Image (cartoon, rainbow, N blue to C red; front, side, top):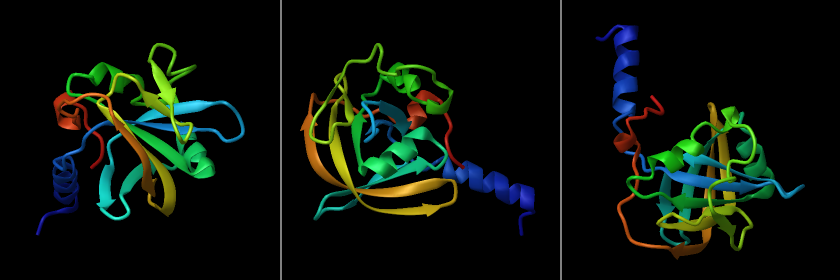
Length: 165
C-alpha cells in the first residue's frame, strides 16, 4: 500500500496524463457590454443527439459568474502553434484590462466572443450544471458552429504547461 504522499504524487502524475486540448472560452455579461475569455482545457463532447459539450469552469472566476448568469458560452478551437494566443487568456484573474485588445474577434448567435484566427468555434446554450469541488461542470447544447480552416488542435502537452492533478 502506498503512503499518503506517494498516493498524492501518483494521482497528480496520472491526472496530468489525461489529454486536454486548449480552447478559448468566450462569455458575456448580460448586464453590460462586457465580454471575457479564458483558456479552457477541461472540455469534452458528452452526447451526439443533441450535441452536448461539457465545459468545466473555476468557481471563483469572473467568467464563471458571467457564464452562469448568461447561460451561454463559445469555444474557439486553437491550432497547434497558437500557444502565445492561449497564453493571453490562460490566467484570467491576473489579467487587467481588455484581453481582446490585440486579438481579433467577432460575435455570432450567442453574443459571446469568437477568436477570428482559430480553427473554428461552437456556441453553446447551457442546459445543465453541477457545482462540485472548485469547478462547475456546465453542460452546453451546441446551437451554432463554423469552421474557419483545417489544422491540428493545440493541446496542453505541446505547451509544456501543467493544469490539474
